[in-house]
Image (cartoon, rainbow, N blue to C red):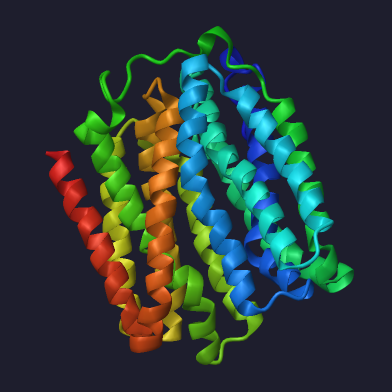
Length: 380
């Protein structure tokens, strides 16, 4: 990987963390699009697949805040991260051995509980270690975006070669690689202290700035629900083929990677709330145009706005949380609220698209507008 910290702080922390993100997002890039294919191959119908996936998502906000609070009290970050990766790998083996709706439901719920813990702990660990070493988060995290898109494309080829029944074996291999990478992460060590908590002490939820960041992140990230759930179907209905649709998704991720690559230089010029405001404004523009069925030639430019709607929003939240000593708790609470709001938005998106077609993006624009208003108010 080409990213290298300065010699004075080159203890391998950034490189090993980048390797971890690369491995983790191979798993995520296979899991998101292809687990439903495996479930169908195991004989589950559409309703059962929906229940299995929803149950896994619903359980996450229950376990993540508890685990992250315990970790902060004990001063743990790497230990729970390593344990969560190995537990997820073991759960995937159990899932592969499961047949029938109820066993698969139980095994996937168990896997989802372990999997849900990985990213909050990983981001808290990475932010604390990188900040203490004077390193930017974005140039390290971008390797996850790179491998995510590679896994999306490669997973389709893998599916053709190995068949749907072997998808969980591929997921298990990817998570074993993630667990190994987690085990090899450099310890935080004495450099892990941060200058001051972003919430200036007291309860996280008693901090207006923390509440604002969570609110902005939740409504802006959940505003992607129509895009994530239905854009491919809408583009296919226009006559775009699989290659063209894949290219459009790829453009968005490449734009995101570009922002992550330069984020270190932006961090000194833009406050976290400024990044969040850019993200919310970018989302508002993106969905406002998408609502009116723009010409196909405009879609690549609109996909470039993913750098703002997702990338800037994510980076702004991470920059804010990097200054929080209760990093695991802050990450866990943020991730849990985003997951709950996004799940609700995805449920509403299906109804909106069925009733209004592309005008469903107006609801997403309204969500982004709420985020924009909060961000502008918080900047003052």
